Length: 358
Ligand code: KG4
Ligand code: ZN
Image (cartoon, rainbow, N blue to C red; front, side):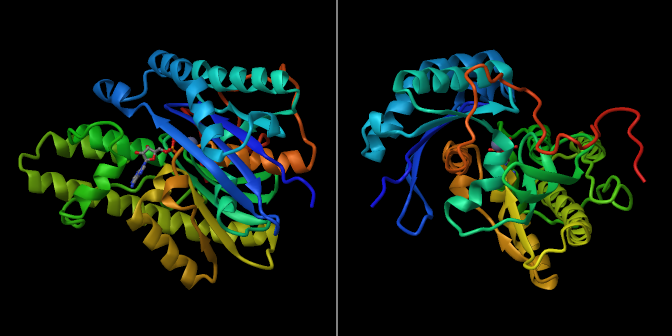
């Protein structure tokens, strides 16, 4: 029996320091041997968002023992590792540099190949850690920094169908939470508060709902929330606003996802219709339920990573590393940290003033 590949994944693009060892079973399916994630939420809480300098310092403090813990928990010997995969972008450059340099140094000392991973590709492939999933598929990536519909044709072959022209969905959740006086990151708290509120109490705008294909926009929504928060006085009104906000996001995603389905079908003509939803916001159960519902209506197979693999983690980085390792797609040690690294390099930049949508 040939040796199964052992891949070390390292993630430090934002405020999670993470390391993971994955391998394969006899059927060729990935197996997670360890998956260590250390969150910096407590460090950034008082600032209401991630402070890059503090995040980078914390990564530097923790990276070596997080990697050691991942190796120890996996039960392997460090010398058995076949390749080291580190996130190289997109993200905060001071944070990326920590995991990237550590990964490169380890690959040199072990004399094993180095693989530079796109963090977004990690999210895109995250369901593969637990579900058999063949290309092509439609991907909705919803995180704190990104909101995109992409057709995933193959490893490293992405076509963007739609993106946000301003805030990411997770960012909209976090900013709304901040306006409601909830600690960072407030996204998960909004979901909890919304359960106690009336989703029909406040009528919030749905920017570009009827134009721009499956592109998204959330900044007008945030402005409307800001106005209302100035007037609300009771906890019940807070709950109602959280519920109304979440319902509005769900209605936007429902309409835009149906458009994305049509564009994916037109472009790919897939034999099987598969819809993968990944990124931190994919943990939201109300959003999940709506997306599962429309998948049933439109004959799509809905695929979500388990909740613990929705947020940032290194198992998903190792997953990309594993696929690249099998194709012998290795990177040089001068691979840069890339703060901006779109999955579809050919897609137009759609942020800021001057963007015209049909
Ligand atoms: O993918 P992720 O862990 O980090 C990025 O790459 O951005 O996503 C984090 C984002 C945050 O904005 C967080 O508030 C949001 O995901 N989030 C949620 C929920 N859980 C996490 N948003 C809404 N509902 C949730 N349950
Ligand atoms: Zn992420």
